[in-house]
Length: 498
Image 1 (spheres, rainbow, N blue to C red):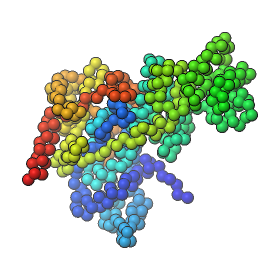
Image 2 (cartoon, rainbow, N blue to C red):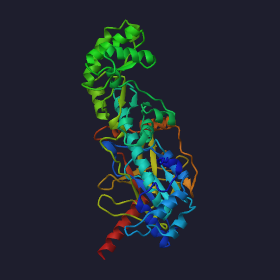
Image 3 (cartoon, one colour):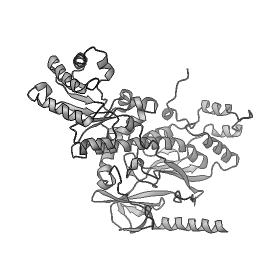
Image 4 (cartoon, rainbow, N blue to C red):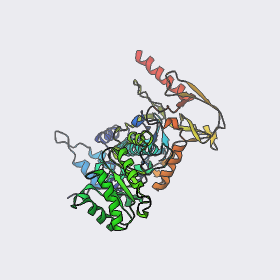
């Protein structure tokens, strides 16, 4: 039986689509393999009807890049590929060219835990044409999925504390996840603010807390529910949260209390996984109030699960005021249920030093290699400006080096916004790789990434974090880049008519 490889560790360039390789062959045979270009990754629409995206996945993409090489097995696989008529799909000269190739790319990237918005570059990749395109699939596969789940988690965490009280959110999605092992989903969820996971293997690998209680199957293995509860509590005296809705939820609540009394162990929590979650939380609190003098029942946490998402959490907490202490999300978190694909894209922006642009209704791109300037006022994100990457003098010592006029992207009439020299600002994209060598080691400590994401989210005004109908964050083009874009569009229109 073949052993499934860890793609991040093997660094196989076959982490791509077939057309990336057939294009690479065509460029090589046409003498264009070493021509240089810049392509950039971005997305066009925020997921979940929200107002932002939380960037995630950079460290794992960097791990793959650092290990990138064509192994003998990779070359032999390509050598064995055939066209429909039985002829070799790949020319032998091209395969010889691939042997021993090393990455020659230079990459700027938005670090994990940053907040990003539509049409801004997230990655800017420069190098030989064939290599730029050969990393596209890996980049988008990692960025799209992890950023989606990190963002979904951040929205749930936000909803869980909308009444001003902090409630931990647990990730319980392994059994419903769409990735073998659920590692990436757990990683992204933790960056997004989850405080623990039911995924034991991922918890071990990433060094984060694991969490969990019991399943209905355990209760059903005993003739009496109370006996199941007692057995579980005795076996797990430091983890005595019980699932009370296997049969009759009200009886389950009473049986959990009975189990605590008969074992002499404190009851740490009750989890409700079905039915009217708000009703049963209130009922549990009503019944527990009668036991206010019992030391075994003084700190019982109520845990809600059952297909939670940010909207249900908001309704439970804000509208119904359900007295839950902890929330556990599974299916709708790890599958990014209501927006299962981000739609991040990777487009050519510059070829042999010449700006390139795709002109299409609703999809016209921004020419040239770019970066993003983020303006910060009173420790809040005030707006972003997309500028030419070479204009590094626009920021000096953490402030704008000169006055900037920005043309707002999400405005139909290209509204102009002025930013004055001296305003606090920073470049969003940071150097990751230079000529094939990592020059920055991305942060891998998930606790630090979680704290970074939390800090950045705190700098985003509440109006942009509304779950529905959020205010649109201002993203614009620096005036020089805006003029260049308009000139290229006009030139293309004139040439098209002629």
